[in-house]
Image (cartoon, rainbow, N blue to C red; front, side, top):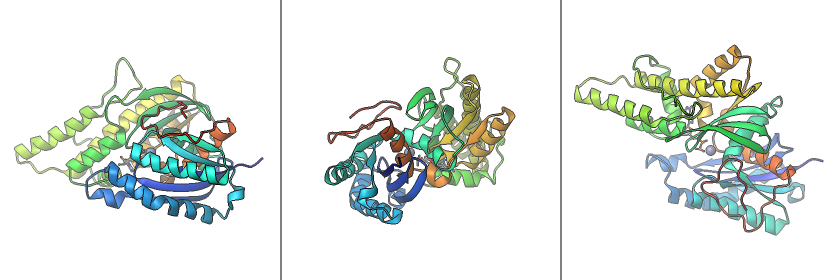
Length: 340
Ligand code: KG4
Ligand code: ZN
């Protein structure tokens, strides 16, 4: 039996809705990005994000249903991100989904945003099936996750401090590239020398799959301050390239080592940082050397989007997950945790 899901995502600064059939076929994927609005402040302003979501959510949902050329009768369930994320932002999507579920008599499915990022890999890669290792690296989260089954996860490693994307954004700000920094560092790094500056790579002795990026970030800031004090001109491209190489080395080493230890045939990449060109390239090479098949989503499915929520929501729906009309936003929802 075929299942069509209307999915809604509003956990951070993208207002998004999508229609997804049978967990792989994206019929529509509408994203309203608020980046231009938040750029002015150098990062996401939660209150502004919530207000913009309220303004845009109905338009985005209508556009997703129209573009998919489906009627409300064709939709089997409404899936919505209920955590983790910004509470005010999440509440807008959750309220909209509950209103639709109630008015149109549809089942409601609450979806974990990070599980959505992982599920983005299923959209274009029909070969990819659990079990596999997934490196989730975004602006808010960095996790190494063993995907045991479509709805069953084990956290193998996590960041001790900053998320990988957050480190990219902070370093970008320090060298004057603006927000969001990841894509800008990625681009500038192509003109720089990745071994120009020896920035530290933090490998945890006691937890080999955990990451830490705050020491690296401080090292970049110290380097920039040192140059300023000694009146040395900073080569920004070299800083970008050397910083990026340090992040990529740590993420690549950890994820390939974990995939091998867990005996995984597949390794997948997810989250905003999964768009990083060096990370993709180095993981591709490392996976080849270790006979692991490597998967990653297209950039449109790496950043926050609702199609990935429709895919994760499909698997949750099939597994019998249902949210009541008391479903609430859970800002610090953990991977694999089910609430509401
Ligand atoms: O997954 P995402 O859209 O939002 C969260 O759930 O956090 O990730 C956004 C993050 C930002 O920190 C952004 O700078 C980073 O992903 N990012 C990148 C690249 N594109 C986006 N980081 C490195 N290289 C990129 N090409
Ligand atoms: Zn995200």
